[in-house]
Length: 421
Image 1 (cartoon, rainbow, N blue to C red):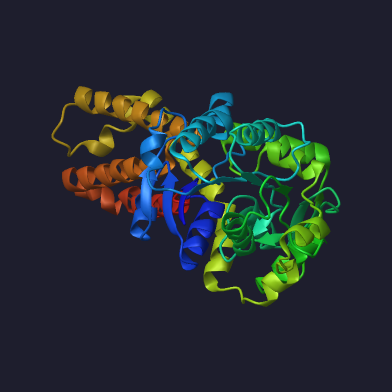
Image 2: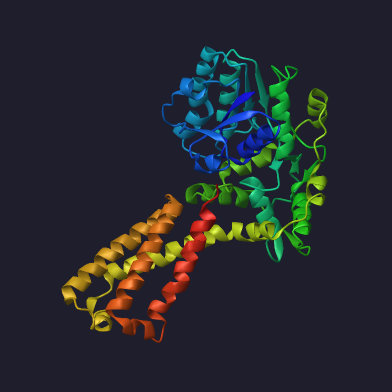
């Protein structure tokens, strides 16, 4: 079959795309950014779901749609566009060109009082109203060889030194399913008519608590046991609120509320409907050893926001100093520079404004990879210019220009960590 896969660049989407291709299906992978998918050998269709799209053109030659697009957090307009408005237009075009089926990847926990749950419910209603055979899959927590979002956060918490943080007593329950097993369910729904019209919750056969999952992941990573650090629910909500304000990804108010509602499903009903036997959580860990990349990712995951805020603090102070430091405090150190004191003062004030703009960009998490490139250009430019104009600055007793070298390395690391896909 020729499958049009929406949301193909996400954690779930990439697993589905690869699985379907391995089993002989042709996939047109659609996402907002498709350059990586193109390099992976997929036919692609670039689509920003917040903007109008020519879906009839996108669906030429396709037999079915798999919609794996979704947002946990975002503005009301973004959530509405991704979960219902754009899919409604896509499904209308699918009906016009005679597609055979829609598979929608939704989520468990839709009884939660969150924008995510509400928009997911609306997305399901849109799919059911399309007038085509439809299968809705509400997977439980997904794990895989790689990780993203909530599963990355779980690994990061498990790898923390000294103690393992968890929400409350860690009694929240999960039925994890491997992303490849979810992809197999998608393929079954495409290749047969047995699941048409059903809403299923793909999940694994092993139910584990948050505390047990974190302890098992810690052991899998080869870390010694650590005591549990219980975070009271009000603190978890406060951290979720702060995560929303600072754009900290899976640390969000919606994630905490979804966790309260529950991330479990009915394995018996899923197994009966599909006759599948997905692997359990313990099998997922025991069948593959953790590698260096797993440990690095787990330990660096929570350092990523710390690096971001450290850089923000540096640019903020640098900007304030550039704007308000009296000229006599820095002009003496630049006596060898062939510019007037007035020109140097104006340059310092202008650079201070740029530094403050970078600091606020980091605070708002504005296009962080691009902002990192700009930071590299700024620090590199400062270093090169002053190193050539006033070489004595390299020999300052407190480091002077020498400190820019590790700063450049830190910005580079930050840029790498922010490239999630």
